Length: 594
Image 1: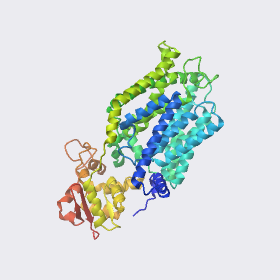
Image 2: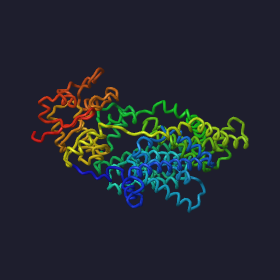
Image 3: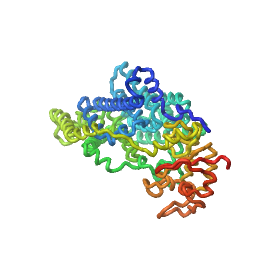
């Protein structure tokens, strides 16, 4: 009963482009569409690794660093990418462009660039930012973190202000262009990134003398500047959302509020995220795997030294307003930090905090961890600082350390992991799900082409793909009306009367409803996180099974719908007729005369 503009709601321009490319190129006889799609994504992963290689090389000045970064990325692929087992993820399209953007920014922040090189680099940053934004719906949150990196470094006078302004402008321009291509998607216009970047640029104009005065004076101005930017961001964001009547992303803020301990919530949408393992804290065994390849040890070693250097540089910059120098001209202090190194340092710290708090975001951190650790081991500046601190400084020792240690690590990785990788490449696996295949074949052969199906988000995505039937709801969750609709459809797993469920489903034009035993009798999640528990809590009902319930929750007046309907009792058969059943799925046809 509702038509959705997929180009507006879903980030699928990449599939549209790829389908056009497949039809234009004379390759239909040689490769099937599905393999063309898969190989394209694997090719993008090759671009991803190449971008990591280049970034590490740019930071360290040696190709050996890039080689080590690439090896670490591959040997830690369980924690650096999901492409090998979930190919069509939006992040698999987006992260290669994000890595290219970081490589371009790393080069752009170098001092004394030629005007032509600077213009070409800005073009590369803009194109990669635009493509990253176009291919992933969570782009705005990643770029907000990036904007925070620029804000911190600009405030501490670690980056040239002009270059930071260019990068803010590119983020805004890229996002506005994506907004136009997505038919003025309101969620983009109401993003915190747009409000933050505009606030920073406005606050700069209001506080022109931010980088003058004594240490305490500058520190006070800095805190005031932070306060002004924060207040202005929240003000602009609220104004934009009220003008646009935007509610698309409110579930994310409810989730964040509950996740970081600002009060429990009974909101169904927020709890749906909170109960997913991917949105939980980063498991400790991640560090065990990263340590097994020596990546984590190297990363902590490099991070410790660069943090010490960054703190010394920040203190110097805040203390000395009369003779401000760039990071790379600090001979008298014997501690320096290049702008591109400072950028990658704060980048890895902020994305590290993001990964620690939300496991799904670890892929942004772990891939950059490979770059940062390999750069540090091959960097003459890092070894010079360390050897000076322990009074063993010698130019020859620096040369020996920066080449011998990476080579030894590479030999270790080849010896320990190469045979296992070759064995994995020789394996051929096949996905086997006969119950789902049987369901899709039945829908194709036994139901009208205009039939409307209700069920879980994930299953209905498969129904749409395999049968082309009309759906009541689907997995895209960044839309308020779709979330409300999904919650209503999911009452099939709650404790509701058959006539109530029938009325809800019919209000969306439903002809058939698919019930899944894996949801109705779910055991994957703990009590309180099963889908049926989330629905009970949202409906004010007590949860099933042994355990505590909040005192204000009440006993439901009806049994659980998905269980009771299988007994074929008259109150249920009057509204629902079972037309298909196997070990996993139960399909019921809704009566129209009630």
